[in-house]
Amino acid sequence: MAGQMDVTEMSIAQNIASIEILEEEIADLETQIAIKQAEYDAACEEEQIRYDAMKNRIRFMYEKGDSSYIDLLMTATSFGDLLNKSAYVEALYDYDRQLLIQFQEIQRQVAAVQAELADQRSELEESQHGLEEEQAALQVKLAALESQYADYAERISAAQSQANALRNKMSSEQSRISSLQQQMNAKAQEEQQTLQAKAQAEAAEKAAKEAAARAAQAAAEATSKTTATSASAVSVQASASSSSSSSETSTAQTKTYSAPGSATGQNVASFACQFVGNPYVYGGTSLTAGCDCSGFTMSVYRNFGISLPRTAEEQRGAGTAVASLEEARPGDLCCYPGHVGIYIGGGQIVHASTAATGIKYSNANYRPIVCIRRIVN
Image (cartoon, rainbow, N blue to C red; front, top):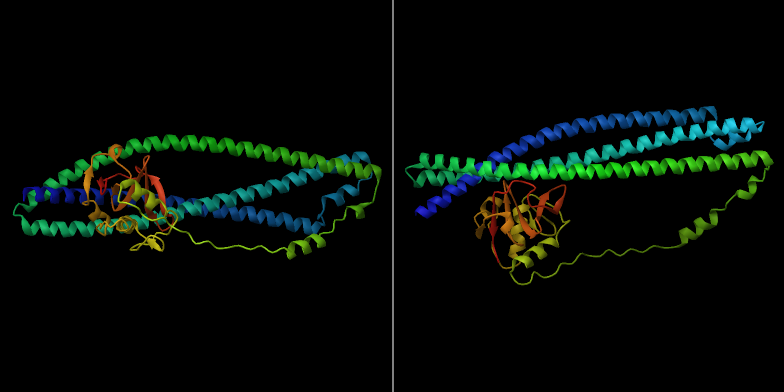
């Protein structure tokens, strides 16, 4: 009886700690969403400004008849005049090109912020579902404890103390992980900036060569005063006809999955990884049509003839405890506040994450781990 009471109190402590951490995560996500929404609104406003600038430039070119750079060059009256107009054409070309590059960059930024905003909203929704499950489970356990034990208040107080200790341990570990992640992100950002600078330099060099080639061609045409422009006409009708006559066939292939094999941890992990990319559906248990986090783990193990409880909170009591992530093996359940995934080795898990990302891989320490449970060896 005492052993059962200890298990109940630890389970309640885990629920309390999970709820507190989830509430903090939800509050933090709401703040991040508000920030990203402001960034998205600002990016959309900048996109509209750039778009209006491009429209005005196009309208000016149309109204002034400045529809062709070559027309301007062909009106040169002398070699000196040609050089002046060539420089002017090159300046116009660079201006138009910069407008286009700026507009494309703004569009990329808007799309990136929009995607990140959608991911965060999806993560918030999944966290809220997890919080609801945790709160419901805690209420059931509290009611059972109150009805069974006369020293209910003392046991709840002890459970709260255990929850505080567990939460402090999880927070300390998460701080260490966050510091490592920040270092990795800074390095990745530095590498990305280097690549962007290199790409911009290459684009500028290419544009300069193109402008020089056009100016040289225009100078040659003006000096020789050749008018044989008709010889440069290229017939595209034949190629279009040839292109339209070629038919492309595509065959839709249905994704197939290998059999689960014997009930070993490695086989469980390998079987689960096949479903990466499939959708997340709250309340779902289908590995192909859609499932949530606990529906995913339950359905994976069901294929091995092993029954798991339905919710993430209940699965924290399945199997046997694993002391730490360093001792985890493929197939173990990594349990988080309101969430659960399957450890696949190398510090990674596979899990049904959010509606935006579906079933995917993540670092096992991407959130504070409540406990790790071993279902099979």
